[in-house]
Amino acid sequence: ALGSEKTGPACEAEEGTLRQHRMQLALYYRAPSSIEHARQEAGLPHREVLRPAILIGVTGRMVEYPEDMLKESLDELDELLVSTARMALSSDIPISHFARLSGEAASACEKCPFHRGSLPICGPAEQ
Image (cartoon, rainbow, N blue to C red; front, side):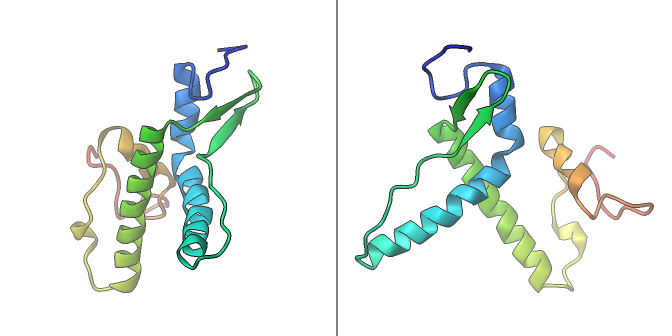
């Protein structure tokens, strides 16, 4: 990996770092992309928004998200935003209407306010 000219992840650790920050970087990519797309549609000067990248401190490499990983992250972000909006706008929908996460996706439960505290009301499907 060190000294590599490759812009995508060169090892499992770099890929893991990209996956760990996928939602944050998908959101940071989506916002300027939407703005620049709107500018283009309006006939205004616009810029190309490049795929997000992370600087890996240990190697000093700037690791760019592969196209397929970015698309997957953007799709996941869209699902998350739709679910969040449904929960926020429909206070009478029971929490049971939202599928519990399993496998690798269940790690998100550790950061979710519905799972934290002394009386969690939700959690991973395996519990």
